[in-house]
Image 1 (cartoon, rainbow, N blue to C red):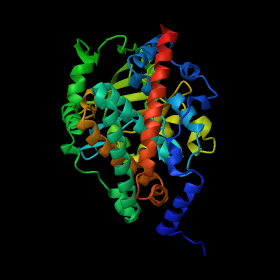
Image 2 (image 1 turned 90 degrees about the vertical axis):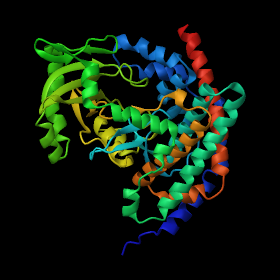
Image 3 (image 1 turned 120 degrees about the vertical axis):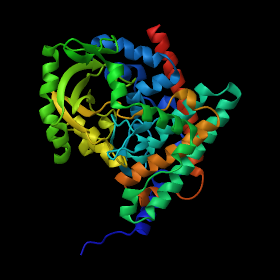
Image 4 (image 1 turned 30 degrees about the vertical axis):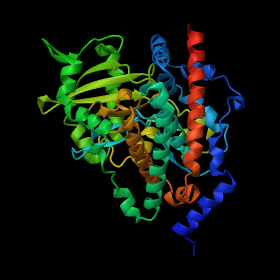
Amino acid sequence: MTHISTSQERRALGQARRKQVRRQDHAHWDGKLRQHDPLKLVAESMRGRVPSLVTLKYERMLESAFGFFRGAVPVMAADLALLPHTGIVNQICGDAHVRNLGAFAAPDGRLLFDINDFDETIRGPFEWDLKRLATSLVLAGRETCAANERIKDGEKAVLKFVASYRKLVDALARMPVIEVARYQVHRLQRITPVSDALLKAERATPLHTLDALTVETKKGRVFRNDPPLLWRLTPHQGRPVLAAVKAYAESLLPERRHFLAQYTPLDVAFKVVGTGSVGLRDYLIYFEGNGPRDPLFLQVKEEPGSAYAPYLPGTSTSTGHQGWRVAEGQRAMQFQSDPFLGWTTIANRDYLVRQLNDHKGSIEIEDLAGQGLIDYAEMCGELLARGHARSGDASLIAGYLGNGEKFGEALVTFAEAYADQTERDWKALKRARG
C-alpha cells in the first residue's frame, strides 16, 4: 500500500531543504556572477515582435528603474537561475511585482483583488516569486519616498511582505484541503491603494469601455483609431482574428461556450498594452450581445514562452501551447478567474484570450508611498501565499521558512542589492540608447 506522507512529514522535508540552501543564503546577489549581458537579453526578447513597436517598449523601459524592471523579466530570470534554489516547486506568477496585482470582476459579479498578470507563469522554485516581488517593493519605495525615507520604507515593506507570506503559508498548511481552496483574503478595503483600485474597477464597466474605445458611425459602432496605442483593423486584417474565435470557444467550459455563442463579433482592433508586452500582437474584438448596450470586449494577447523556461527544462509548461500555459497557470493560482479565459492560435502564434477591462482596476506607483507601501506589502504576501498554496505544497514551504525572520532579513538584503543592480542596468540602457 502506498504511503501518503503527512503534513508534518512534509514540513520536515521542507526543513531539510535548508541543508541544500540555508535561508540566509538568499541574501546573496553579486553582478559578477553573470555570464550574460543583460542588454543583449533584452534585445533578444524583442525578436519576433512588431518592429515598429520595439522603440516604444524601449521608451517605456527608459522612463524609470521600475519601468526597466517591468520590461526586463528575461534578465532577472537569467540572474535567478545563477543562484542556488530550494527545489520547492509550485506554480509561480513569474512576474510578481507591485503593479501586477489588481481588481477585477469574479464570475458572480463580486469585485476581487488578486495577482492578475501571468504571462511568465511556470512551475518553478517558490522563492523566485518572492525575490521579484520584494525587489519591486524596494524599487517602488525608492520611486515614491523621499531620499532619507526610501531605504527605511523599502526594508519595512519587504519584512512585512515576507512575514505575511510566512504566516499565511503556515496557517494554510494546517487547514483542510477544501478550506485552502476556499480561502479568501480579507481586509482589502482597509488598505488604501487596494481600495482605490477597487473603486476604479467599479467604474470600469463594459459600457465605460464601449465609450472609451469605440465611436458611432453610420454603420454602427466601431473601434477608434488612436495610434500608436490603438488602431482599427480592416476587414481583411481582422479576418484571421475572428476565425480564431472558433478554436478559442473550444477552450472554454461548455456553459461558458453557450454564453459566448450569444454574442456577435462586430469589429477588431490592435492595441498596445503594458511594458513587458509592448511589441507583441494584441488584438481586441468588440462583440454585441442582447442589444447595443450589451458589449463584450475580448483581448487576444500573443504569448511567447515564459522567460524562465530555458532554466527550467523539466517543466511540462515549458513547451506546448503558450496561451494554454498562461490560462492554466492563472487558474491554478487565482481564487477565481475570468469566465472567458481561454486560448487560441493565429498564424502559428499562440494567444491567450480574456475579457478586457471588465471591472478591472490597477495600482499606481504613486499610491505606494509611506505606510501605503507597507500595508500593501502585507497584502501582497497573503495573496502570493494563497496562490502558492493552491498550486503547490504549503507544508513544504512552511517547513523551509520556519517561524523566525531569517528568510525575511535575507530577502531585504537581496532586494536592496538587486534593486541597485536594476538601477545600474537601467542606466546602462540609457547610455546605450542615448
